[in-house]
Picture 1 (cartoon, rainbow, N blue to C red):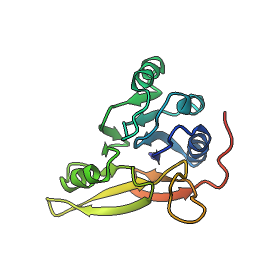
Picture 2: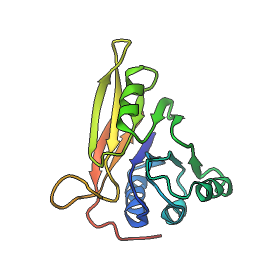
Picture 3: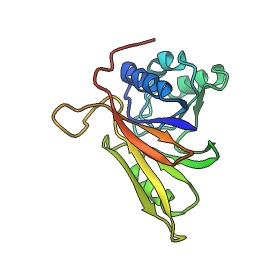
Length: 180
């Protein structure tokens, strides 16, 4: 199963839609949003794409009541978990949070195949040693909106993940201007 991992859209719908469209074209069947989604208007166009979105809070929470209302009306397309989520997708156990320290701590437990976080706006894919002597994938998709991303051009980033092969690729958006 392939997945789209995004974070830190900060109320910017066009780059979120662009990343999800690219992920769908690459075979993604679900989206994980690692927080700082902010509001429902950010989601409306993305939900029209018909791919399930799993999201957590960030430190910029936004209109939580509206996000939960959209979830209850979405027929399972939008799942909003609060501060953190434990998911099972493609036979893999996944922990999702916004804060990097929480992500690293949960990766250290060895309880998960994949831990996803955001917040720093810097994309990263790596392995974290865990207490059982193994390793857990720890990924940060950066900012899908490109906000405060490192580099002169602040290019928006997201991750295409393959849960069968446990392969995670940082992708970039060049011109995220389209809406559905």
